[in-house]
Length: 275
Ligand SMILES: Cc1cc2nc3c(=O)[nH]c(=O)nc-3n(C[C@H](O)[C@H](O)[C@H](O)COP(=O)(O)OP(=O)(O)OC[C@H]3O[C@@H](n4cnc5c(N)ncnc54)[C@H](O)[C@@H]3O)c2cc1C
Ligand code: FES
Image (spheres, rainbow, N blue to C red):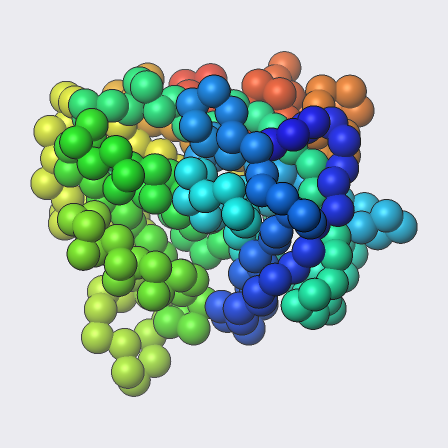
């Protein structure tokens, strides 16, 4: 994506309210397209970009749009503090800064030829969305693909329309809600209760987990019973970040830097280091 160290000014061309606290922003490069890397991708699913504004700061966010799309990238932003509240105050046509992509992303080559289980909750869905878009474009290289996604309430489930499209492309989606309303007809309970729904070749499967720290510990209870070895479980970690490029030490987990060595780690590299 051009010079990854230099913030570029991008325009917000579309904003969609996905839930009471999450908006999806479409960002377009002014006067051109985003540059693709060697793999033909604008970013690797699981990488992050830093989006913000001079005077407010920047937030690491995982793009959710197809990594093949170079006219725009889309991010989902949950309102939590200074930068994300600022982003939520913006309108279509406003401009923000963007730099990146940073980090490693999911090990796409290693995942080829395998069944894939993506377990996530709440606002952990964006990197999974980019991964699923990648898989759909390269369908013949992957086995069965499951997305297990949980949210507290039906209104907090993100990207419902996108998931309907994924289903048409053969992705198996299993949703669960913690606190259903009267219209909810799907599963009730935690993501951890979904394991019984999955039919994979566990000896040849890869799992990915994305979400807030406490949820990751719980997700482990989904993946372990499936028999997928730790070596084939990949976790995307969220940490406070500043520089994004290994200089400020804000993002350490154990001896690793989430911005440089991650954000995607092998499960056995970071076990018990969620928070
Ligand atoms: C690799 C990566 C990908 C991410 N992808 C997304 C995404 O797609 N969508 C999304 O909404 N959020 C994502 N996050 C989390 C997002 O970066 C933070 O919520 C955001 O930076 C908070 O900034 P703020 O200035 O609004 O909050 P602050 O005012 O700095 O803090 C508000 C609260 O958020 C916590 N917080 C601050 N920074 C982070 C952080 N980096 N990770 C987790 N908690 C944090 C603080 O501890 C505090 O409790 C991602 C984080 C990482 C590291
Ligand atoms: S964010 Fe600065 S070292 Fe990782």
